[in-house]
Structure formats: C-alpha cells, structure tokens
Length: 271
Image (cartoon, rainbow, N blue to C red):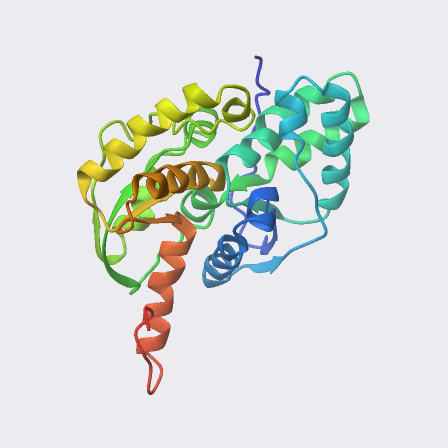
C-alpha cells in the first residue's frame, strides 16, 4: 500500500473555524464522543461547525470497492470545503482522508487537488489539540486512573502516541497506567472482525487481559471501533468496574469538573 505524502498545513493564528468530522460510529453508536470533542475544541478557542456529512468510504476502500470509495470520498470533499480545519475523533477516519484520499484520485487532476487540500487540513482530535492548537487543559481535574490503548491507524499511519498521553497527564488527579503492549491491536480492524471473528476474538482476549491487569478505573482510546470491541469483550468477561471511554470524554469530564466547581452551588461531575 502506497500512502500519499502530505505536507500538512502549519498552525495559523487566524484560522479559527473547525469542521467536526463526527464519523459514522460516533454518529450512530456513541454521539457523546462528538459532544465531548466539540467541548474540547471550543475550550481551545475554535468556532466549531458540524456540516452535513457521511462516511469517509473506508469500508469500501478496505473491501476493494475503489469506485464506491471514490464516490463517497468525492462527496465528503465537497462537504468539508471552505473550513480552516477538519477534525475527527478518530485516527482511523482521519488517516483515511489524510493518507488515502489523494491516492484514490491520482488519475483525476482536479479531484486529486481537492483531495490533497482536504488531507492537508484534516487532523485527528488529540493531534490537533497538541500539535496545532498547542492546547493547555489548564486547571482541569479528575481523580481517576487511566490506561490508554493505541489504535492501529492513528499510531501507525498518523504517528499518534504521545499526544493523548500528554493531554491525559496534564489533568490534575489522573494517574496514567500503561498496560502491557498498549500498541497491540484490539482485534476490531473494521471488516477484519467480520471476516475473521475467531481470530479477532482471540486478539481481543489478549488485549482485555492486559487492560484488566493494570487495574485502572478507565480504559481510553481514540477510536470508537476499538472501544466497542474492548467494551464487548469486557462485558462478556463480566468485568463491570472498568469504564471504557473515548479519550475526549475523559478530557471533557475533567473540564466539566472545573466549570462546576467555579460555579455557585456546583456539584461534582459524577452526580
């Protein structure tokens, strides 16, 4: 697989409009992740918009349906035109746009140019907050222990590893506990878990064993697909103590603690 080499747009102090690319899994299964992402982006000083949007086309692309992927991608390119940045709470979907869209349209000069323009301004959420916005979470606080799972696409295609850990570690009260092999796959893999359920299940068991061993309050990740796989496995194990959340949810919860404590008559975020 040949990935497009994209020169990302540098941080621009005057660029303040962010389009949230919510992604299919967030929209259909965990919309609270989208709300958390909006809260973080607004706290970082950005004007957040959520335009009409659809799938990034990754299932078609991974399944070999190049024509279908191109059609879906062309629609998404049109939908996100005109925004300073596009931010997704998903390393997988952000990588699809950044790494694969330009390749999809290599034989169409006009669409390739538009695909490159979109790729240049598309970021995964934690990478955007750290690498572009230079976001300081300030006095946010949460008394909890957290272990972090590195999603495959975010880590291997976008190089996202330190950014979520930096944000989590900057929250007062959070104890970050590393599991064994945090970068090992959870077994989801999009279509992989559908085509090879037995293999995916065994991979997932290794991951949940690592998670349980650290005894953290939360296991966090940057992709809802991974979270659904991990949560399903933990549920079948009867493990109810470990909360499975998107990293955006933990950070937004920490911000909510601050805002409530600063307000008269406030209550704790868990109430």
